[in-house]
Length: 321
Image 1 (cartoon, helix red, strand yellow):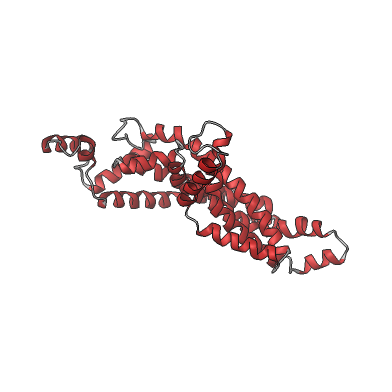
Image 2: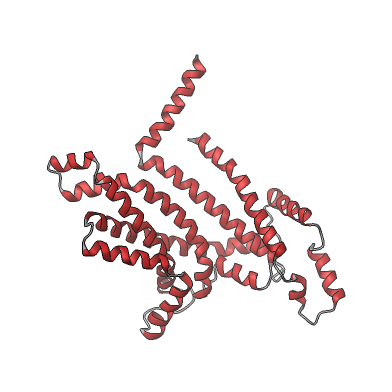
């Protein structure tokens, strides 16, 4: 298991380098001069050229890319913000807990509702509830987060006055953003749970458990659901990474001072170091979430843990021979 984790960590390196290179290319071809934007349209050309030299924008693309990578490897330095003149790493670490909290709340909501609706939908296949839940799932997947956020503010904040429209000053401020961000993931998890449950409840051991007189609730929860959770956990882990990325728009809609809003503001101002650092940080977080999900497999499915033990035993036998 430890060797597998170490191998996965090594595999992250080319992935992160690839993500960083793509971001550099996109920023390189993006129209707009950061120096010109910082100084204003009325700035003299001499001042613009001087600022470009100070920011290192006149260096070749490859030199800037490898210099940036070197700074990350040697000093964990993601650069300096063009606008605030503060280290990007410090700003990201200060805002990321807010984004992680929003993504975690959304993940809890989506997993609970998705699994609950998926199990009921699978056990009541082709009923009115199944058709209604499937329709709601398709509707939830189709709605853009930013549109749903705006509609939530209009309905629940302006018309009904139940929840605040923006900010993050207490528990009530997190309800609408978490529900908005978790809706699409709820729909996805519900569909995966339903599909996995339908496959499991048709297995022979489920029929055997029922033939022995087991309570239907025990059959569904103890025998069927546990074995149907593997693909659900896979999708849930991927959805958590999607929620981290989706928080970019949701934070902007609800004015939550997290990493997402910080990146949106940086994009508007052509603050490229912030954009690069934010995307790279989210890519690292997404990679580690996937690694944790793979480790959780062995805790849920004994067959995976047994596979590691068998491989380890075979290697020892080969060594002794």
